[in-house]
Length: 158
Image 1 (cartoon, rainbow, N blue to C red):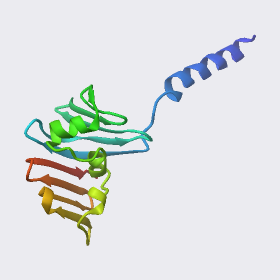
Image 2: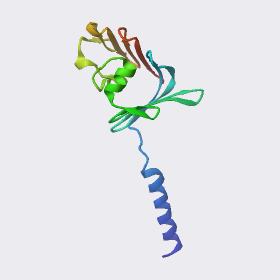
Image 3: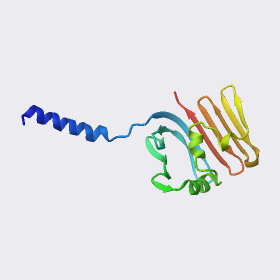
Image 4: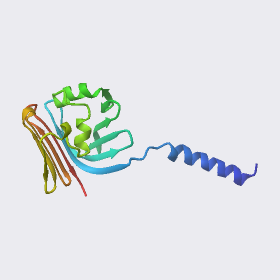
């Protein structure tokens, strides 16, 4: 085998190993993210990465990763994984349905669109029996659960 062909094969293997195996997000955005619960208080800048089968939120403080939240088959917070119901009870303080956090991050109506009201910049939902106010307005998402003292606020940065 000549040297040129050998170098080409080595280069092709190198490219395949180091770029072909990486998972590129379908969508990535910089955000200001506040996640305030009785068990966790984080409010800093970071990124939301949407992959085919996973959503990942990475929040940084002074360049240090302080929150790495992965939503896939399970939900993992800083490498500690649990099922969605356990996470919801621990951090959202209620046994919401499994996809609620992903719906909030994705700006999708919650609870099958209960009390859905279209606004000039998005929509809002006031779910009185759960004391939840959820609104999506352009680049701002607010989820406020007054009963359980939980706030999730996401502002996309341009």
